[in-house]
Image (tube, rainbow, N blue to C red; front, side, top):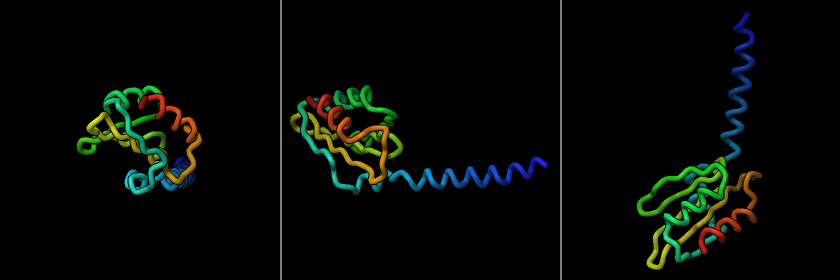
Length: 116
């Protein structure tokens, strides 16, 4: 009898996981998208990174060469911080999927607060 319950549950779980995978962009897709925000800052990348980690929800960070990347939400936003001669360059790319956890105006506000 328990196997009759397992099969529908397994099918439901597989469907939910498939939908979740379709709803978020991959990191390479985010990197290929046009930047929504592209700014220079006199602040060092590490300072901007620390500030954004405090302000943004569900952030994961990684290094890509000399650049630092912050992935925000379920692959909803990609923030790339690159060292420059005068501080850092900040590039923000947005997924085509709708992520209500961080609207664009709030992202712009947090970027402005952390880069000035």
